[in-house]
Amino acid sequence: MGQASPYPAAPGAAQRRLIGRPGPSPLIGAPICVVVLGVLDSRKLTLAFATGRGLFGVGLLAVPERLASGWIPDDHSRPQTQMIVRGIGGRDIALAGGTVRAVLSEEDTRPWLLAAVASDTSDILASLLAGDALPGRAKKGTLALAGVAVGCGLALAVAES
Image (cartoon, rainbow, N blue to C red):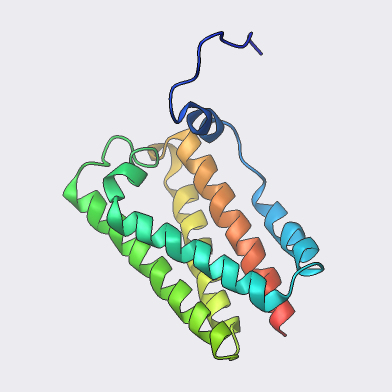
């Protein structure tokens, strides 16, 4: 590691440095959620999980070019790319809304959680199938985020049983 710079970092520099580093293993999601489930009520954790997904979806809908720039840097400004990113945002909002409604109405959340697990698994497979077309940091970020989401979604679905 190099020496620390005496100059203040530019805004967002820490986030950019973190994005370039390998994230947590996708397999770490379930153990983290299991530990947290031992401390928090699973319904509250499911509500928090769904809220995070929904907020991410709002970001994808509202500023697709900005969020896609680190993910698909060569094509992020294309209208076709923004359409697809907005579609993913809509998917996440729908999954979050259904999960939140199920929690608040005290219904079974498993169908919503398992649908989210399926969509996140699809993101993982699509990233792996993209090969070198997806930049390394984007692939690692997608695999880490979707992997943790799959692990947490499965842990929450099991806790609902």
